[in-house]
Amino acid sequence: MNQPQPIAIAPHRIHPETKPGYVHLKVASLESQLTFYQQALGLRLHWRKDNSAGLGAGGPDFVRLTEIPGARRYRGVTGIYHFAILFSNRYELARAIARLFALRWPNSPTDHILTKTTYLEDPEGNTIELYCESPEDGIFAVEGGEFIARRADGSPSDGREPLDLDALFSHLGESESFDAPVPLETRIGHFHLHVSNMDETRRYYHDLLGFDDMGIGRRYRMGMVSAGGYHHHIGYNTWQGEGAPPPPPDALGLEHISFIFPNPQAWQDFMARLEELQLPFEQTAEGVLLKDPSRNGLLFQKP
Image (cartoon, rainbow, N blue to C red; front, side, top):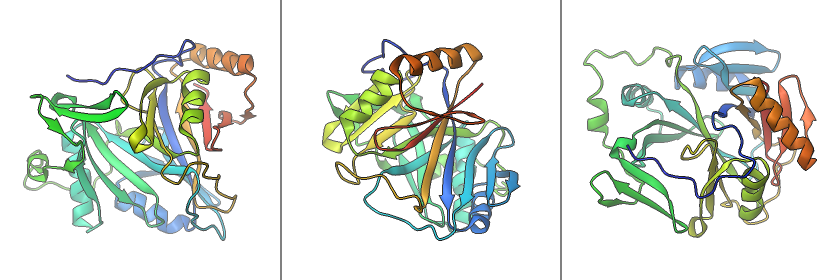
């Protein structure tokens, strides 16, 4: 199986089993968003209190929503580009895409070779990726500062081909039900952020926080970092413009993303690193909240 390799591993490497936790979004209508995330995506409502709610697959939350009165969408600012829900296999991804088709919800099935995916937007314009891993089909990575994709037989691909839905849907039975909730093993796979500066972002996540540098495609103005050599846990780009400002407080979209450590020792090592660097953070009931150089919120949860 093909897996991209890190361009660089940080001297103070974050624990390789650190995983994405949840995305917290600010929304205009909690009610309509809850309907969408349950009906179109098959997420379970875990809890609801006042103007907030948490959803997922029945275990930890991986989507949280908070209604902000009078909030609106801003363009040309930093924040979330998309968040990605990871399915355990092609069968579950096929069910997820078939559910969208049954609801006639617009989406864009795409073959990244290394992953099979589709993209869609929720009712308020937040972009979501639904995907499963397919490393047996080839690789999608950064080599020499360029994004490359190669099929398993060595033939090139642009990594953005239309997904072969006939092949994907062949995993489904004739009387398949598409309205059942997503299975428990479903989780957040990665986040992709709008940032204001590529080099500052790489330094913060790689040099300071210790994520592996999975490469920067300068021509695409996009980079990737991860824990443990995964193809990416955070993608970042300057597609909103170099020097893009953070959104104002009344903006729809990102409140913060989160990561979870695998054990207490990993948490203690990370906190020691923050103290050594004297990086500012806010203590919360869940862990510590940081802001990256583009003012994107980043919560590290206690294990």
